[in-house]
Image 1 (cartoon, rainbow, N blue to C red):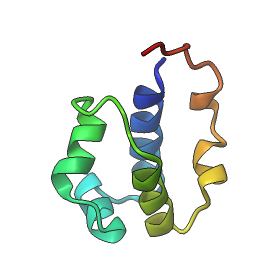
Image 2: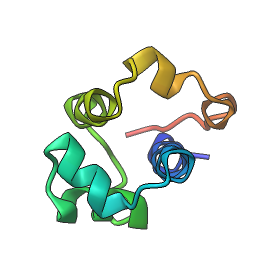
Image 3: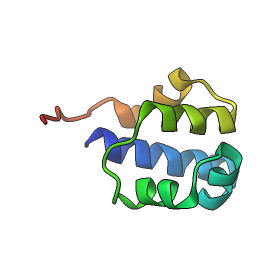
Length: 80
């Protein structure tokens, strides 16, 4: 699994846990709906740390908590 796919799954799981939509998350985090929709649809394969930080701030979790999930355990090496 790539980091982009893992981030996508993590965002979707966090929305499910909190019973919010992706669009609601975008409002909470101050990220445009198109940006977040591109991430969770897989159109945007790379997510910046600042975007992850905004998501974490909106959900009141730390970046460490965001990445402390089983989905990030077996990532494939990505070569540029």
